[in-house]
Length: 314
Image (tube, rainbow, N blue to C red):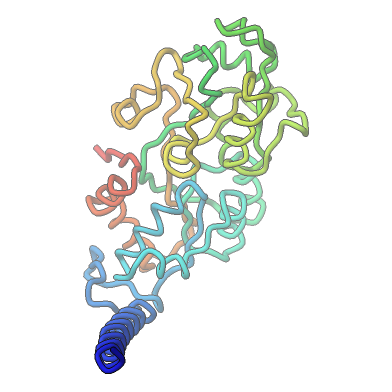
C-alpha cells in the first residue's frame, strides 16, 4: 500500500499548483501597475495622447465620479481602478473651492450655487461651463407611500412648509418630513434652482438635515418606517449608485423620471452636468482637448455604458 500512495501523491500536488499560480499573478500585476503610456490610450482631437504626466488636476461631484473615472481610464489606457488613483473626488463644495483656488484644472459637477459663484467672483475668478450629460433632479419617497406623482405647485407647497400632511396631496394621513441637504451641496443647490429660491424654502430642522446623498436615501427608508419622509437628489445617483428597493421616484406633473423621459426632455426638472473650468484657462491647455473629446461620440458612448444619459449637442 505504501509504495503506490506516496509516488502518486507528491508529483501531482507540486507541479499543478505552483507553476499555474505564480505566472498568472505576477505578469498581470505589473502592466496594470505602470500603465502611464499604455498603447491603447485614446487619441484626443489634436492627435495628442494623455499620460499621467500630462493629466490635468481633475475633481468633481460624487454622482459624476463613475463617469469621469471611466473617461480618464480610456484616455490614459488603463483600468478604472488604476485611473481612480489619479482622480480625486471632493464632491461639489470641495470641487468648486479647489477650482476657485486654482488647485484643480477642471471639475465635473452640476451648476454652482449663487454663493459659489460669488466666492469665485470675490477671488477674481469666473467659471466656464461645458455641458456633457443630461439628468434629472428627482424626489423620492418610501415605496409604500400611495402617492406616485405630485404637481410642481404641490411640491412647492411641501418644500415651503405650507403643505404639511400627505393627505393634502392624495396620500395617507401622515405628516410630511422633508430631509434636506447641507448648504453648498449639489442637491441643496438643485432644490433652490428647480423648485423654490432659498428664501422661500422652509428652514431645515437639524434632525432632518443630512450631509451626504446616500444619507438622504437611508433616512427616507429608515425614518418612522419611511411613512412620511421625502427627499431629493440627482437621478443617476439614486438609480445607479445608492440604490434601494425601499424607495420610489416621485413623478412630477405625471411624468416619472427615467432614461427615456429625461433624454426626450419630458421630465420637468432636467439637470445638465458640466465640465467646469476657469475662464482664464490657457488656450493651449490640454483640458480644452479633453472637453472636445468628452463632448463628442466617445463621451456619449461612455455615458451610455455607465448608465448616464448623454447630452444631445444638437
